[in-house]
Amino acid sequence: MKIGIGYDVHRLTGERRLIIGGVEIAHDKGLLGHSDADVLLHAVMDAILGALGKGDIGKHFPDQDMAFKDISSMILLEKVAKTMQDEDYRIGNIDAVIVAQKPKMAPHIALMQENIGRILNCSSDSINIKATTTEWLGFEGREEGISAQAVVLLEKRCL
Image (cartoon, rainbow, N blue to C red; front, top):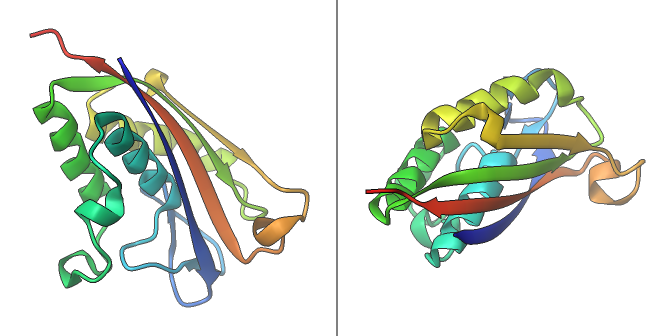
């Protein structure tokens, strides 16, 4: 077994679509980043890479590389999943939290879990996603950005 933790944050801007967990969410602002800035998937990928001892997403998908400009984080998650599988690991479980004052995440969580489970070849029952606000405190509370944290347990695959 291996455990990894991931954290990501992106600034909100009026010039982008809001994509979290591979789900486009109707909102007047989106997240600013080199890729689609999906904070949840970035936190999950960092947790997986950390558990594997493979660094972080910046090492694998540098923001100076135009090949990753505006790329879907679902595609990046597929690449991380391949790395995990090449190392003979599979998802034991994922526990994640999205921190955003607005919009409400609850209506989208089931689809986020389904998206992640499909890419990582695991049951959505192995993926727990929560959402919280900061009661108007901090950058999330002021609606300047959204953050996410994830913890991942990897299990060695039976060969």
